[in-house]
Image (cartoon, rainbow, N blue to C red):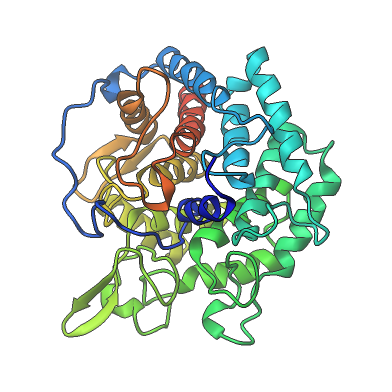
Length: 389
């Protein structure tokens, strides 16, 4: 096993939004790989095929469990473990008795990492909020009532580190990776909101209201975001934080702004839907405008293959929460999102049931992460097909 220091460094690259060494991966704005026809077409996606894919993925993930009950190729990780648990449970893969035992061991690992401050995270690693948020999602998915005390502690921890903007107004309402001294970002903030949603925190709670103000500061929409950069691009999409886009800068009419990109736009959109903003809310409509103009599953728009499976995951969660079967695109076409992403994920699934991303930014070279994202997404596809959406 690699040394602890190396494991922490590598694990940090998978965390959603931490910068990583680029190596040979594609840079933001690069052309995606040449497209090849998908083996499964949207019209051919059936509940039976999706169930088969889910079963294979469940067995794949279960086979990757570490001896301590956790998941993660580079050392202990509540984040990776929680992602696996949520995917296995919410997709239905845990109905299999062997997979169910995998989940039970994983939950034991998660609970062993409960900290005195109420958070659940691997001590000494730099992404406490991210891991705590996913721990909430995992524990509520398994048995919310049984783990209510732990979940309550996690929510108190997350609310406690929500930035009040005293030191930097551009952080106000957001959440960083673990303390108020860190830059708030949309990735960890939207995961915290997913935790609030899973824990049943009502949308009129002050934590939601403060977070919505921060999310709006990450949107390229001058109608709701009065920061100077928003008027430069003004396309309704989202960026990583009010001071950074992982997709880089863009110059429009001599002024510099931040380029919107797919994974963060779906993260922002999902946050709005979870907060129960009305469909005619200008923030929601602006996000849908960007999505309809940039709809694709061939890449993470603006990032090529970087963060691709995170993009697929957030795409599926956002559309499932939206609750509508189709989306009308800017060119007039109407698409069935569940069949589209179902076809893509089934086409990319490998013979052993897993998935791999050749672009290892945010540690998507981890097949556990790619499989967890994909399995959870397939669970949303199956639910949509079974509901007739």
